[in-house]
Amino acid sequence: MNETLQVIASRRSIRKYKPEQIVGEEMQRIMDAAIFAPSARNQQKWHFTVVQNKEIIDKMARIIQSNALNSGEGHAARFMSTPGFHVFFHAPTVVLISHITGGHFIEVDCGMAAQNILLAAEALGIGSCVIGFSRFLLISQEGIDLLRELGMPEGYSHLCAIALGYPDGTHPSMPPRNRDVINYIK
Amino acid sequence: MNETLQVIASRRSIRKYKPEQIVGEEMQRIMDAAIFAPSARNQQKWHFTVVQNKEIIDKMARIIQSNALNSGEGHAARFMSTPGFHVFFHAPTVVLISHITGGHFIEVDCGMAAQNILLAAEALGIGSCVIGFSRFLLISQEGIDLLRELGMPEGYSHLCAIALGYPDGTHPSMPPRNRDVINYIK
Image (cartoon, rainbow over all chains, first blue to last red; front, side, top):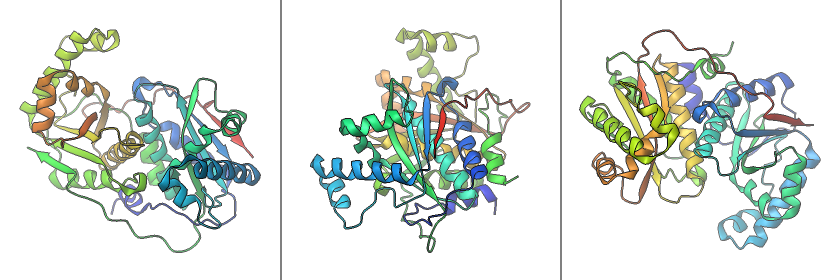
């Protein structure tokens, strides 16, 4: 089978990581893949912070958990109240994705860049998980200040995060996919 | 070099296509790739219509062009007023992507599915171009009615389209990428 199709089919969200940090050269190839995604009118109004510092990752996880528990959002709070919960699953690397505020089509552009990150990682044997809960950083001043400190440019908004690291444990099976979301007109 | 990384790096937006239709089995593998993308809470609130009928593609192109020219949006109108302009570049296949209206994180999900379509196509030697201008279908009743006829479910909104077909002509070079959108925190 075509290797790229195989990578697309086999990539799963990984929720358990080895503590070893991703090799520098591999991380750079993953981030190259991110910016090779197309963007509307080639505007590239995205920004990526690659956090590889355990203390900062843990600090972000604590802020997210605290903000989510205080938010009153039932789904998030149920997740976050699990004992020992860590929103990034103790991954050694977390990529923070942000984009120009109010940019047209920019969430699609960032989604395309995100998928390139996931697939480049998978191709290198590195596990990944998209973390939408990182949006809870935005609901406290401490979280916003931290995003700025980590390099999110002025006029940009945080969108989501991606946890990355070498997978620990067995490869998860694919959750069911609905095929009736596709129709053909010939 | 790793084949998947190579596919990610070499994919370009193609704006000239051969008239030959994409082989059915290949089209199916491309759409499999689309729904293999992750989605928030595995909700898969996306929808794809694969249009492979030239008359319908040309009709969509006419509606988009007419609506764009009437919209007063300078950028769109400049593109559309080029003599002989065809918003889908006469591609033999157009995938229409839509999603549940107001869904949280859904544009990112659709962006990830879109990138899988682009990369699966590239891996099979099929060219692609994301067409954001398809949103102009939404600003006339004729366009909305057509989207419904083509299978966009009730309660869903059109997001963008992807033109697909075998490339005609030389492979474009990569437009410049900004590397200063990435910073590392170690």
